[in-house]
Length: 333
Length: 302
Image 1 (cartoon, rainbow over the protein chains, first blue to last red):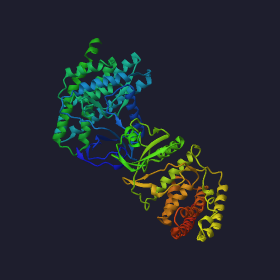
Image 2 (cartoon, each protein chain N blue to C red):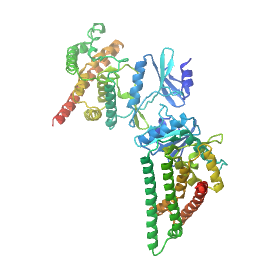
Image 3 (cartoon, rainbow over the protein chains, first blue to last red):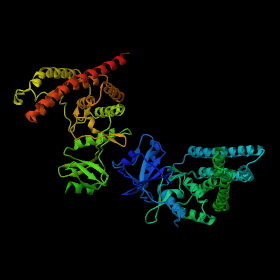
Image 4 (cartoon, helix red, strand yellow):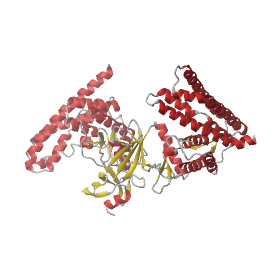
């Protein structure tokens, strides 16, 4: 948190007279005599903003109320545009990591509600599914190739860095996970083809603890629907599990229970489980750590190795969970 | 119900007391202006231009929303609206680009909405001397005004000719009075405090604005301002001539007579001095605007 200043014109639109302004990244906490507010600078263009507002409206239409509502300007506008950025305001609610609030239980339950209320069986288009399949496999292969290149480059070094050494020791395991992931994508594609079905839901886009705030009653509320998108429910679930695996509350048992909790609202189709397993197995987190390693000179080797270790642990955890997830399907098969 | 109570009930701002009875209200969110409307069409027009004009470079005194999301409150004999009110003037010098763009936006909107009928008035320019032909009731000390009347009439005839020549040009719908004092500074931006009068078809509002601008600036500034207006709203093809016609119209005569009618005899000298100054200033302004217009025409020909 930093002390900050906000363009006065933005506050003018809300008739806010701040007593204190604190900066939390792109969010400014504005404390006034009328209460505290969160002013968000949204990195969106007009089209994205319109879509974001449409999604907020849609959530209202389906009676979904576990979302922090946007406070309109004094003129009734949902946002302010200052010629460069969009800004919107909500009431300030705390995100307090010290509480005993069960974030993952809350999130998975709420995702289940949002998804089940917005689920739409798409009219099956072989072409669309084929395109999605192709794009996903291409992405996986491109990243795999990048990881192989990094491996070759590391092996050619006279003195291998601690980071590279740690990475190389896990390379074959990571490649196996990547191959598994690709194989499950094939399984998902075949499933869609056979069943002639594909469904989409309104995905939050970034469901993790940082996007949950608690109201005065200690109830959870989602914030930040800026990345909301109509996509397979697996998109949100994969993001959720990847984030949840970082916290001490994670256990395979808990992860399976979360899935059960989700499926009480929207049971996943067998092919969707394959797609979820594929997302969870692909070593995307490790790939992004390599990119950070190659792109930054600010972090120490020690910090980078720590990061890599954390990601490798998460990958092992997710790989194991994905196997558990697929067990019933494998047994049936 | 008392107006203050009514505002407290419908709006999120908390009224404190009247700063100016039934007009300016002190609230927990600063001073607000209260407006009363009996003509719904007129109110809608004022709501529309305020919303349309406001952009990232200019703020307007738009209607505040009530707690229920409405932009007006129905009252017994009409409607009530709530607006921001500011008093710090927005500087003119070196800000011609902001003012000019704003006036251009107003003209653009006025033209788009020129078909609007509610509350619209025809231009009052050609009738400005109707009330000043008989000056006998003002006494014998008014030779200055009386002597200027033939010239004023000639000027008005010229205006009539321009109006007739350019009758085919669509005229924007604008508030008849646009004054630089309506421009306030809010967080460094231009905040335009609009009025509530019925719009008139024509450019008299712009004419008054330019005269007002000129009284506080100079030739260079008025030329820059016109350039900026023209950049946003094409003044060629007749609008420049209509603006000049508005400036030629002998409004200072009308103003002078009104001042004399409403003041004591001992103030006459002061009023007449002012009249002469205004006459002279207007003459120079017309010259400067004509120069600008000719220069613009030459640029187009090239």
